[in-house]
Image (cartoon, rainbow, N blue to C red; front, top):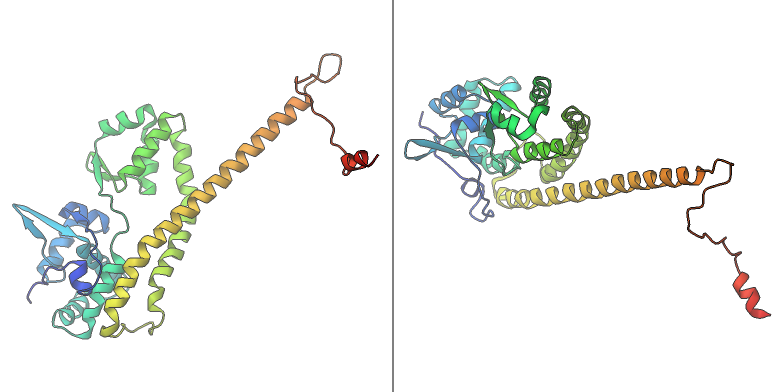
Length: 296
């Protein structure tokens, strides 16, 4: 069976689909971001299920079309389809059947939302970032949460920016165990938010039957709409997160100031008389007092 020709989001979606910058991956990075293995990547290529990478010298470069294809393969395998079933599907796509329309949707919906590339860290680098807070227990908890992944004697962070942010907070005195607990506690809420945002993006498909692909004529506009909605959904998430952080910090600050004022108000001299703060607080005037005086 001939191997699948290499494609890009714009090529698979439609001639009028918006140009989208692509992520690029080595075979190791591709395996990591798709929860697969290098061996599986090679096997899928040999069977024609996955397009070969772009060759740059001796290095193969993969992109988001490979990510979305691998996610689709993994999803179908998890639902009980065999590689032979999936191979028949891909063959039908490559031969120009109506299933070709799934390619543009596959990339628009299934490609990664983040532009970050995973980064490998040695134990020495982590110790330099986190100091003595990078204890074996903390590293184990970070691995359990997926913040870090073990890779031989090294560790891989899928979000180097998040790892750097955590290191900054740790250097400011926030216990690493507390920080990781905050990640664990908040993750279900983020998952719920992500589900709501993804539902908004893919709701474009609701006008079609659940077990049927859109008509080929509808696919170009549909794919364009999904690419447009994705960044808007990210803006909504960031905006709501900023609002929530402002409210939470404002509530905390208000409660803290109120507690301080209450403590100051209850402070007394040894003889029981209250300590003067040096600030004169005038009693509130009765409503309408000023107007009554003016009439005299």
